[in-house]
Length: 444
Image (cartoon, rainbow, N blue to C red):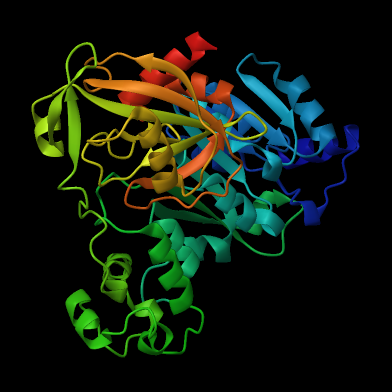
C-alpha cells in the first residue's frame, strides 16, 4: 500500500496507530517485496507472520504460494486482513504472539517466521520464537537497529554480549540491511534493521553442554570491564592452563572471546570429563530368543553390534493436562542421537526384570519416581532394534532433573501435536518410540 492508501484505510477501519503497541505501518512496496524474497519461500512453506498490520508483507508471502498464519493483536486489523485477502492459504489469528503455542509448529513440515516485531516486546518475542530446539527453519525479523546489531555482533565490538552468544550458539545471524524510519507510518523514533536467522548444522560446533555455556557467558558479561579470570574464578580454577589451551590471553575480557572459544571454555570448566564419555562400557544385557526366553547375557557392544535380541522398557509420562513429556536424545547416544524419544527409556540390565528396569530408568533419566502401569508389550523386530519392549505409562507434572549425558532437552506436548508431528516429520523420532506411540494408540 502507498502512504495515501494506508492513511485512508486506517481512517476507514477507525484505527489510530499506537506507537507503544508497535503499530508502525510499512508503506514501501519495494522493501516489502525485498523482505519476502529474502525468505526464499515456496508453496511447501508454512509462514508464521507476526504483526501483519495491513498486510504489507502478507500479500507477497501469499503471492509466493506459501501458506500463512498471521498473528494480529488488534481485532480491527485482523478483521481487515480476512476481508482484504480472502485466501484459503491464509489463517488470521486474533491473538498476542507472546501467547502463541509454538509447539504446534512441530506438526508442520517446514516453517518460517517473518515479522516486524514491536520494539517494546521484541526481546521477549525473539527468545520465544527462537527457543531451542525449534521446529522453525528460518527467521526473518525487523527489529530496532540496536537490537539487530547486538544479535549479529562479532567479538571485540561494543554490541557483542551475552545475547549475541546465546543466540549464535544455535543460529547463524545475518544483519541484512538498515531500514530508515521514513518508510513507516507513523515514523518510529529510531531506525530499524532486518536480520535473518538460520539453524546451525548438526556437529558444526564441538560437543558442549548448553547450560554450562550459558551460565559462563552470563557470568562473564555480568561486569564487562572486569577480566574473565576474576569473574570465572570459581568455575575455572586452573585459569592459566585453560586460557592457554583455548587460545586467549589470561587477562582477556568477555568480549574478546569468539563463540568457539566460549564453547571450548565451557567444556574445560571445572576440569569436567567430556560429556560424551560412555559410563556404561561394562553394561551387560540379557540375551533372549524369539519368545523372550532368557539365553544368557552379553556386553552392550556385542548385543548391539550383532543385533542380538534383548529387552528394553519405554515409559510415557503424562501431566495432569494430558500432555506427554518427550525427551530429545543426547548427541552422545550410540543409537539415534538428537532424535525425540519416549519420556524415559532404556535397556533391561542383566539380573533385572522389566518393572525394575522401568522404575530405575525413570529415576536415572528424569530424577523422579511415579506409579507406573504396563500398557502393551512389543515384539523384537528391526523397527525396535531387536528389543522386546514393555511400554509403561505414568503421571507426573515435573519438574524433572534431566540426565544430561542421556537427554539434551525435554518438554511436554499435547498428544494430538505429537501424532501430527510424527506424520509431518517422522525422521525427527527414534524408531522405537514411533512403534511405541502407535502401539499405545491401538491399546487405548
